[in-house]
Image (cartoon, rainbow over all chains, first blue to last red; front, side, top):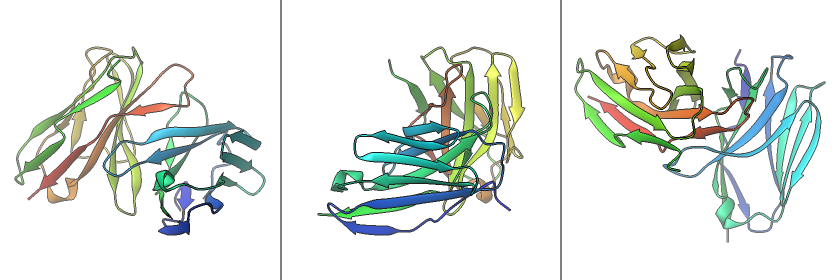
Length: 111
Length: 112
């Protein structure tokens, strides 16, 4: 079983839609949960991170962590064509430890 | 700051050839790592280093060597290239207590 599972999509939505991206994981020791955005032919860039459970909001982006269900989500409100990218979730036990990445979800926002 | 710089951006190798992928960072980060990214497999850790002179294996280390003689540089060596090593390779660095990994632009490697 993989440490982190993520639906690869692809996901296609109209501009302005709310997007929900999700990952599940098996290691209950994970405490740091991150979302990276990767544009085509570029390296991933950190979008948001959350420590332990709860919600975190940054502009149009909201990250949620449910440790009891081992489930994390990223919501994008008022999606824009510039949000078209692959979104990767990542997790680690500690900040000094290895990151475990999901396979990424490809998102296209249609104008 | 240039961040993390990888060279080359593209490379075609013949089976059995060796090569070194270069990675340099100018953020004085101790933690550096190499990943490969394959369709449907995501980012998989090859090797990592927590400081100069210290390296360790990740999830998929076979066929690759690393060394870390300086804080800035972390080269990845392919010893005898195989078609299974066709992939996109990313180098990343991370600061102390950091949740943010800074990635390079990637090296697209094809082994024929």
